Amino acid sequence: MYVEPFPRRVRGYRGDDVVIDSDHVLLVHRAGQPPTYAFPSGDVSPDLPAADVTADEDAPGHVRVLWDAMDSWYEEEEQVFGHPRNPYHRIDCVPTRRRLRVEVAGAVLVDTDATIGLYETSLAPKLYVERAQVRTDLLVPSATTTYCPYKGTASWFHAVVGEVTVDDVAWSYEDPLSESTPIRGLLSFEPLRTTLTHDLPTSA
Image 1 (spheres, rainbow, N blue to C red):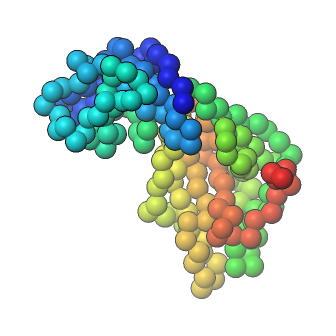
Image 2: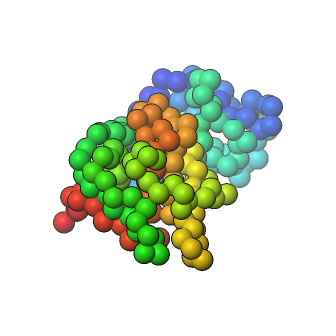
Image 3: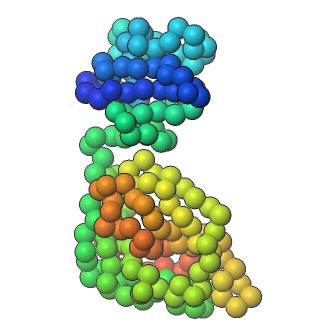
């Protein structure tokens, strides 16, 4: 567990009302969990339900507010989703010649070594490819979206091969956050729903 000053203004909103506003935030890192904010109690509205506010035993004199108790959170003027971002969490997008081959229902969706390797702290690396390398005629947009606090919102795609539809086989970040801009519009593939092979190193 590690606690450090977080020199950004953090605000929490309920509807249009600011109920948390602090320039004296602590960022609390706990093993195996995303970071959390800790606030001086005077920076948190006393009107918040007691169930949403607890003393933070790891940051004496500060309180912790349930993330979902707020309708929206802001660091400075940027809205933050999901949880506070860890300043030590890195994303590196590196051009590579690692090969990626993906099959669905016997059809090859991609087979190329013109890839971008995305290396993210504590996660296995993933390969992304330009759409020109992909059988996009076999992909249709899905209604599924997912959110990553470090990469942004991902849009998903089903694969349709003849009479076979396999849901959510690929995703793309159309408007990624700043450090992930090299993968803007590129595609990556879900190994649990495809036959996916690559030559990335694997953990022992």
